[in-house]
Image 1 (tube, one colour):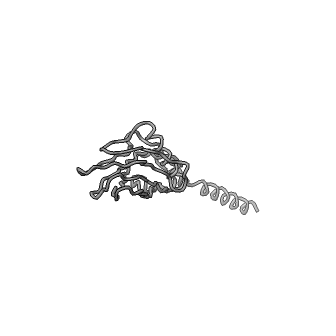
Image 2 (cartoon, rainbow, N blue to C red; image 1 turned 180 degrees about the vertical axis):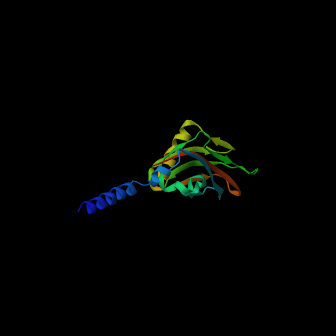
Image 3 (spheres, rainbow, N blue to C red; image 1 turned 90 degrees about the horizontal axis):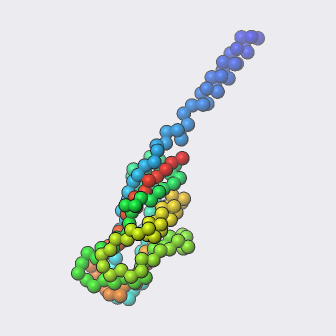
Length: 171
């Protein structure tokens, strides 16, 4: 009887030790910084209202590909920005340039009127981009809509670039 009790005790202790093995979450890294550039191609006939969609996903950031399912937070870096590049000698004027999260219309941001090359990286610009990052992380992806009205025909493509520089945290 003592022998059976001893074997049962050793077996129970072995099972307990085995069940306390490595937790996969213990293998998560510290914060990882990664960047991604997105581009909207700008063309339009005179007076047209244009809406362009760009899908932003956590998977776009290749530096965190192994841990994308464990991302819980993203802190936007100050190297992030919007940038409009005319790229031609055409007269370009875009009115009511607005960004909006497609699935959350409460999150919108207006860049106003753009008619020259310009980089947008003010505190207000970065605060909006942080909201975009928050939506992307919460849903693993988000669609960022760009809308504008062209006062002139744009036949040679201009670009509105978006750079997201994010420090990702995992749990």
